Structure formats: structure tokens, C-alpha cells
Length: 107
Image (cartoon, rainbow, N blue to C red; front, side, top):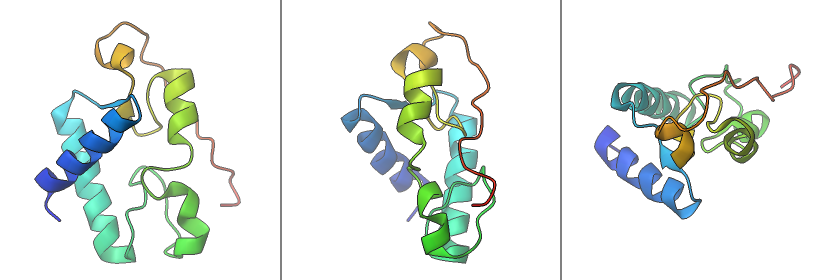
């Protein structure tokens, strides 16, 4: 899949959840490149902002969109890597705070 096609797919997915992709296109393109690199290396699109084990079962919680995305966007306006964001976050109507890591260290 190309970065452009992945961008299109994830934009539609985000919209279906009432979210958006980050309006910082450079940031988004970096994350998409990482997702595609991880898919090529691991066989699945693990979050490039986290360390994957290479075992799909162990990394299931960080396969994009990760299980932490919705609570992160709801509480902070963006997910951990700031790929998925709320409209308010994108429009600067809320503070851009650092999203803490919700993944437990043993993962």
C-alpha cells in the first residue's frame, strides 16, 4: 500500500469515528511511513511510536489503530502519536498536552 492510499483509508476510518487525522501533514506522513515500514518488517502495522516485539499476539494492543486511541483522543484530544485527533485539537481549540503512555511496561 502506498502512503497516499493509507492516508485515504485512515482518514475515512477517523471520520467514521468522529475523529480526524492530524492536520500537520509532515507528522502524519512520518507516522504513515513508520506504519508501512512496520507492516513490511513485522507483517502488521504496529504503532511506530512504540517498541514492537515482532510477535503479533503480544503487540495486538498497539496495532494501528491501537486500543488506546479512543481513550487518548477522548481525554487528551489526540492519540499517543498524534495521528488521530479530535476536531477541537486540530483547530487549536484545546491545549495540546503530552499523552502519557497507557501501555503497561510488561507489554
